[in-house]
Image (tube, rainbow, N blue to C red; front, side, top):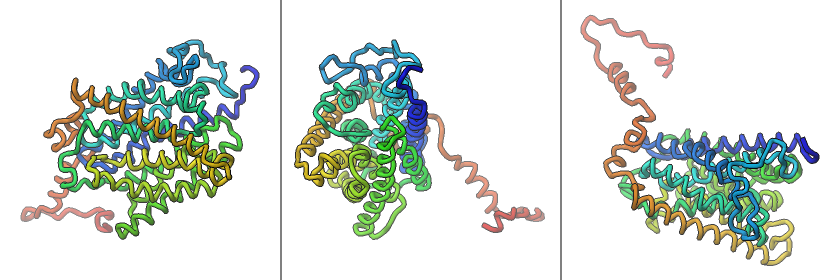
Length: 432
């Protein structure tokens, strides 16, 4: 390996990339538990398919658009690295191979469109969703990643701080979800029929996997096993815990109960909010961001009922709002450039420009893409498919085999024929 290569940093980044990859299946379970039984598999697949589509597009041209030189435009990288051309196992970026860096960033590109899927749950055609992912990462995610993280990107040059993706990932995905759901419209029965989560244990499992993987997401963004990674790691933990408590406190005051769904959602809100700020604030700044994000996102998810937009799984309320809070509060809690450090409003103004620019671009372009798909191949499932269940309609499967369960229960409940010996119960049945 050439001079400058660091095996420890490389191992750290590769492990972090694997942790971020685990977040996409974790997201699938988190979202999958929140939908109704008839669309569980579709919800899982809307996340999983991103692993396939984005992986191929990333090595084809996505990495080059996001992280190649832009020749001064500040908008798009050139295609010098099209198909990863010219990159070998010994080509370095900093102290790690380019392939390690590209793999790490790929996992961010995969999970970002998967986040959008929660806003469209229960009603999107799967084929149209796959097309939307391909188009969206090409014209929204790859360029925005360049703006935010590449040294020539216009948001980067402005001085906006986003350590791990408050703008490029969370505001971007949240506003894309809003743009797409405005095209698809409301679910059948929205605000009339109960649409409760079918499996809260799955939700809790998914949130736990997200929390675990998020250490790779945030600490791994240091791209080295160093002190910055350590700060990002502990800030991620305490902000997430504080946000969970903030959400639970809000719902206890507002609704009179501490719910498991609230605990899981509050944790995710904290993870979202600390993402851009995890290396810029101290521990107590992270706690402050977490508490504010937990309570604010708990309040924000209720806006869909007041404003009438059907954000199925609260992507706007958690990711757009949480990402905005974390990005803006850097201007308050940053240890060098924040208001609490006596640095004035300059950094807060920069953060606002970056956050609102990404929000506007993603909202408008995502609406245009969704509208174009809807006018051509159709984006929304038919009413019959939606009511009967899109798992069966698009995947020819169901998540749970209720028929066999029902038949065994029926056999157990049916009276035995005269002269037939009674079956001997298994010990577990007696205990139950």
